[in-house]
Length: 106
Image 1 (cartoon, one colour):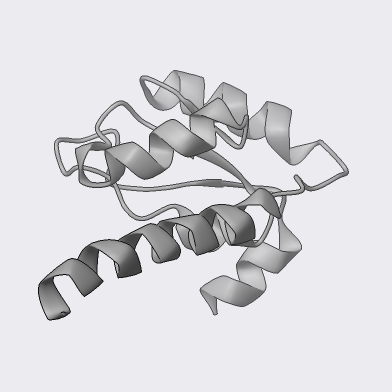
Image 2: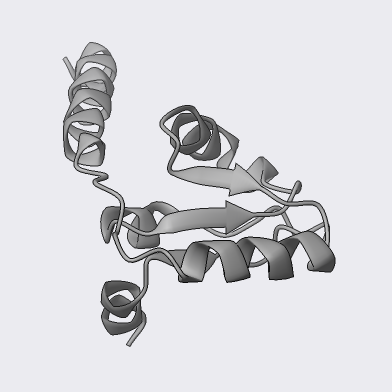
């Protein structure tokens, strides 16, 4: 069901990031070309959020008021992001991981 919803919207708030939970994984909505809005507590996926923030795919809000403003601003946009860079980035990460694993397997 989430996949269908991501296809219908251009932005999502990824939960668990306004509280001390550490945030949820933003890759699924990002792969559906959604802009990601998140809170300050993203330690569970810090590296992923760093990449998404750097590419302009996500940004941080600090409280409920900022979340409301961000959703109002983003939801009125008529175009979705082009997050196709995630495919190449994923391939690069996979290749590096395989090289590292091969050192221990061989």
